[in-house]
Length: 293
Ligand SMILES: [Zn+2]
Image (tube, rainbow, N blue to C red; front, side, top):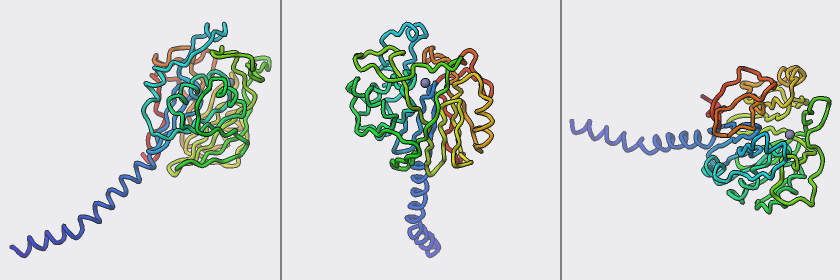
């Protein structure tokens, strides 16, 4: 009897350490690789793993339609931004697709929260950062096909075309008027260059294509395709992008009515298309939590 207990003890002692090391290794590997993707309305997104958070087009202040069309000075809602972005990994990468107000209004407030962020954006974004005296660790102007690496992420940027208003009118296109001082009105934000992003992570490949105008990509498969339904006619987008790229999951953005309060359930932007039925949920919406689930 004694001998049998000794033997059991010996086996337990002999195997417990490697066994627990293996368990801890797999648990920590899972934590490092686990990705969470959330949508905050318009084209504002976060892609987060254990160490790093990517914030795309920071915009949750969502001023009213009246404030926008009368070009009233807009201030980021610092309390709202602290509430939704105040917690998270210490390393932040900010990706900007273009410099319209509904893509960068909250950028200065995000950088005040995280002055050690890397900003990867169209070159004209720097003018807005300097105007607002925003702190940042590093600014990189995006170039077509360029790659940056950051922790577990590899990010490529691609030039895309911004969709036009009816009659081919380009909304707020051009250069920032350098004589202006903050706060800028929505119409003071001008855009010239636009880009999409491909995000490679050990857990998943994600394409963020924030416009309804398609472009060719030199790959055919992604795990997640996030697509901006920014135009009334999305037939070319369906034919030339959605049918060409095999995506395990496709999620539509920028077709919500972003003139309404961030904390109210979302509504569809009048006249704008959807890919599937538009669900009136509260933001942020979790698009994917763990790709291996
Ligand atoms: Zn725009």
